[in-house]
Image 1 (cartoon, rainbow, N blue to C red):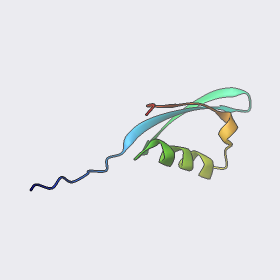
Image 2 (image 1 turned 30 degrees about the vertical axis):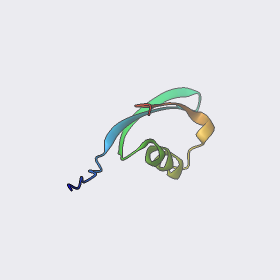
Image 3 (image 1 turned 90 degrees about the vertical axis):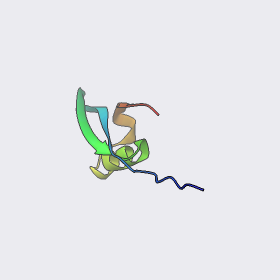
Length: 57
């Protein structure tokens, strides 16, 4: 019986959000979408300001 290892690789996520009425785009590395959102919120930003996160999962 063979075992498979799950490699955890980071992806680049493009976050588009509104900042003082302007659309801002940044790229961050994260293991998954939830981690990307957690990073965004840790920067004292608001979830309601997010326009999009790509790649979509």
